[in-house]
Length: 470
Image 1: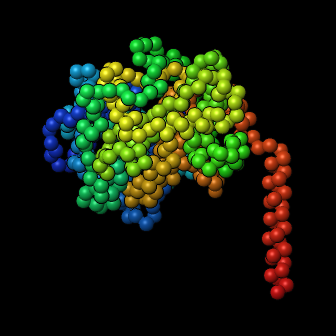
Image 2: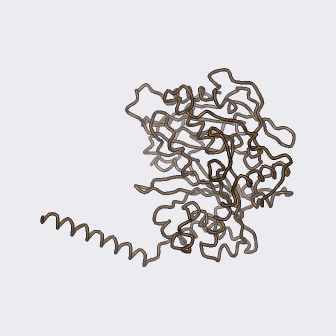
Image 3: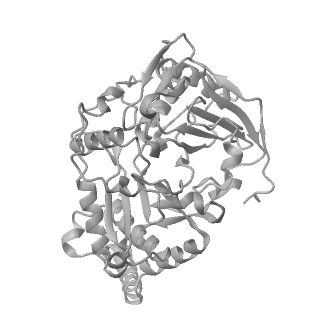
């Protein structure tokens, strides 16, 4: 492993990548889901690639990706524009073709030396995605920043920062896939992008038809967020959920929930309970967890074109008083999580858009008693191939205040899920203790597993002996 203090990343001059051909000069409105206050932030993503010996040695990832970016922006030309804000805080993009930020960099380090420092929360993110002063605003700033850092092993790291109002994870994946296809020689994206943000405009007249607990405590209030008030004291750590952890958690839920309970549901219920215990929240206070639910596909009946790359999700909240959440078995939290997710459908999403317009595009609840989780394990970032094969890691680079992302992670040979969490330091220590306690395998289970392993080994040994005699 390389000490953090040793790593030096050398960056060349910052440049603007513009579309390779002239593009329409026009103004396009964002949807009423896109421009809510809660999405006016930047999302960092990191993608790490090994060297590909089969490629020509003169094949430079910086050159390949730079050119592919420029060609992809011909199709995704709104991403080369700048956001403006109109009446009622309505966001629109000025498609002026000014371009996205791009920087070439190099570092005297190998992927092997970096080890797990590329995983979220990535401690080297500021090196691999430098925040150029004045570049990270929402209005009037470039909508994307891309840094490609070449490593001494022949591999490279592509890190990017995207303005969340322009696209969600599936939308960003469409753009990255287009870049990757063009890097491999395609003349056009296999899926053409679709703007059509009017599909998720508020209705006329707007009408709130569903309960939206995720926005409740900020409507009419102006107090600062939990995260910002504790910013100097906030720390990030990641927690791994593998076969052992999931086995222990599944033993804590009632039989009627086992067949309908997803891994995501169970991890979310566990995190919600452990986090509430760790924060020492008043027993009578309402606590919430929101699951980001994608509106695309047949399941939620929201009809959007295949190439739609805008934000198309909602995050219905499960709500409980802190006391029953902490004192009840895991099944209590799990049922609340499942019920909240089940409320998501087209009517719910339309009701969200209407609420946002009627109430001035409010921020989601921003108290410490609120957690938002997003399942990125199937987002597809791990399939983005610029010609160097699939990345060894690809996904969100860290948690964001109240938001945690679930990402795929291979721990030795086991496939599991890694969850970065952001909490005040003292609460993080308690959270880790609670999580270790709740995922601790009982001694009798450990003995039974060892006994089963020995029995299986004996059976295998007997079979081998029998075969050798034959």
